[in-house]
Length: 174
Image (cartoon, rainbow, N blue to C red):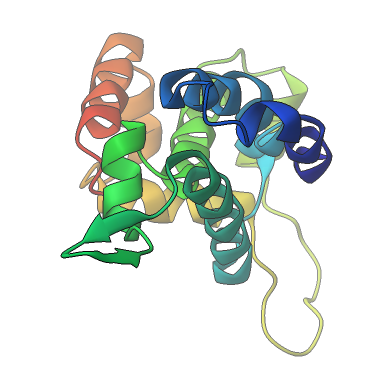
């Protein structure tokens, strides 16, 4: 769907008389929300993260184009693209969305369905092979990178949790 939104806006992304700021604004307001719809509940594998990053860089390269370097044209590096865009990459955005949602769920009442599902431990025997990725494990991993320790206790303090996530959004080291 995000690809469809992008190609629907091709007439606005190609012309040079439309400023880069307008094109970036179009990306941030019309394409990125379609791309990340429901990202709070995603279980991201490395391959998913890779595909999201590729899609985002494709659009940013269309917006910012190549650059001349010593009389030769070259493609901008990924770091240059993210500096020009002024935001962190799409994977960090998805992980922050997931942490925001996890904090919301953990603060809900004990009888709320989403909280009961989050805190439940499924019984039974797991199938053979590699264990499947779980949303809860992704949240634990992201919180461990933040050095939160027990994230569920930390997330119960709404203001502290929001402050921590705002700091991470400003200085993405996730």
